[in-house]
Image (cartoon, rainbow, N blue to C red):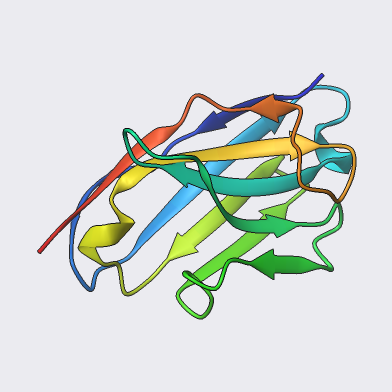
Length: 119
């Protein structure tokens, strides 16, 4: 079992930056693959980035490559999504998710945090 709690969301102007922490707890939290996703009302949840258990491997969606950075600090059981050069189209609810495997499905999800980018 892994419990995830996102924070750090809010209102930011276009071109600005935000860092979203995701705090993980549970017996398997430090050994989980972590992914970040976002969802706009009425649309599917989109994959943004993922990071391996020890942080040695990362993967990004083309839409955020070069602007967003995923990282983790296993000593603090915290994952991060650093978002730079934000655009109004980045407005969404952002979720972190965890799974045992480096795949496309995730067993555990946080509750999400709202990010709004104003133009």
